[in-house]
Amino acid sequence: MLDPRTGRLISQGRNMPKVTYIEHNGTPHSVDVPVGTSVMRGAVDNNIPGIDADCGGECACATCHVYVDAAWLPKIGLPEQGSQEGAMLSFAAVAQPDSRLSCQITMREDLDGLVVRMPEGQH
Amino acid sequence: MSNTAKHVVIVGAGHAGGSAAALLRQYGWQGPVTLIGGEPTVPYQRPPLSKAWLKGEHELADLLLRPATFYPDNRIELRVGCEVAAIDRATGCVALSSGERVAYDHLILATGCHARALPLPSSQLEGVVALRTLADADRLRPLLRANSRIIIIGAGYIGLEVAASARSLGAEVVVIEREARVLPRVASGPLSNFFQQRHLAGGVRIITGAAVEAFDDERQRVAAVHLSNGEAIPCDAVLVAVGAAPNELLASAAGLACDNGIRVDAAARTADPAIYAIGDCTHRPVSLYERTYRLESVPNALEQAKQAAADLCGRAPPAPEVPWFWSDQYDLRLQIAGLPFDVAETVVRGDPGSACFAIFHLAADGTVQSVEAVNAPAEFMAGRMMIARRKRVVASRVADMSCSIRELAG
Ligand SMILES: Cc1cc2nc3c(=O)[nH]c(=O)nc-3n(C[C@H](O)[C@H](O)[C@H](O)COP(=O)(O)OP(=O)(O)OC[C@H]3O[C@@H](n4cnc5c(N)ncnc54)[C@H](O)[C@@H]3O)c2cc1C
Ligand code: FES
Image (tube, rainbow over the protein chains, first blue to last red):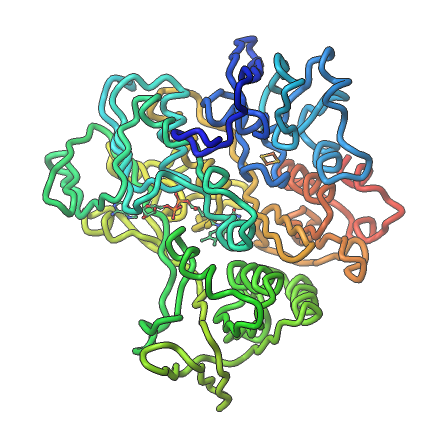
């Protein structure tokens, strides 16, 4: 079924999964992110500061960089060896072992409650 | 001192204008924000129009900058399908084409560009299209079918991206470029050469050094293109992709300085303290190169949207960014960092034959000025960092693949 307001697919009969984005200064934002939508889109659609997403999700800019909360890292995983995302992150400012590009994480039901933190800057 | 209770009017609801409205709210602007756009659609992203959208791989929701509900939810009055006809700086109003007047305290001009037209009388024929807007893309899409014959005039990024998309849809493609090589103004010689080879291998016919002189029609529908070299090429459709020009008439008619774009400073301010200009329509300082330039890219639109919103909200200005751009054609991801000013030496790193390489452009003292990276995201990211830091390198080390990109950047 399509959400008449956004034109996006909505999962029927289930609760919308939530993602908590924590700004670099510690301010948390918990929002609904529909299944199938990227974690980057969830931040942009809710005007959450700290994610720029210059390229709109094409894995071309690395300005949607987040740190995945340790509890969620096993479920989310790291970028594959030799992937575009991994290569972009290898030179992103302030990258860490738990870094991901949030446009490359697609929301799933089992990610309900996901926590990500934003780096100090995206550029 | 900024007073965040005042009324900001933004003219142009594209990538720059839509982003500026969202950033004003993100930065805490309290007053009314009105976003006025000439197109009938809520702000959307243009890059997919020549790529995924054209190939039918995106939904409308993917194209939108933000969902339609975003604007009312964030107290942004979005007026689409609404053209601003004039700015009255003396009274602080914009006049809409309907005659209505909208008063502003602060005005942001984000009017973008329009596709240049060919100076030919018959370019109004059916089947002759440009590509700037969603409406244009929706006119172009049905013309690209298996075995339909499309002629693309102009081998810039949009022309070549459409060529690649059209080939993947099975259309026959001829690209006509007036200059001697494809991407003549926007890529270095070696990169042009690489893309030309890739398009030839993809089955595109490329004709360089030839100008279009006339169109033939059958019942008002384009049927062939005549070239300056005497050749006539039959076709079902024509895409005119000969570049874009800034929408600056509104500004120049109001007495604001324009010169290939509305003149702005590093905070996106015009000479009128009440008026900012952002995005493709501006001619701006690029501090890294100590020059002014008109950039046409999404990152530029976003950077200037940040500058204007930060200045209005009394926030510290954003750190200057390295200009960059990307293009997708076939299985190739091109990423370009920086601008090729004052280039003394060009070095290729990697083997273009492997379709994974980067071209470094260095100033006389070895400073990295720009990097063109094909399927080489690490080189792009490292290049962007090196350009920002004005890093100097030795050409022979750039070309030496046994020297890792990390060592080079370090
Ligand atoms: C097919 C295509 C592919 C592209 N691919 C890429 C890419 O891969 N990477 C990249 O970085 N960039 C790309 N670009 C460029 C990028 O889309 C532009 O740089 C960007 O859209 C600029 O944003 P803007 O807001 O300044 O202008 P625009 O997005 O053009 O928006 C300006 C808006 O203002 C409106 N307007 C103008 N005058 C008035 C008026 N008087 N009253 C009301 N409204 C008005 C226009 O209708 C328009 O909607 C591409 C562009 C196109 C067309
Ligand atoms: S949005 Fe550009 S890489 Fe994620």
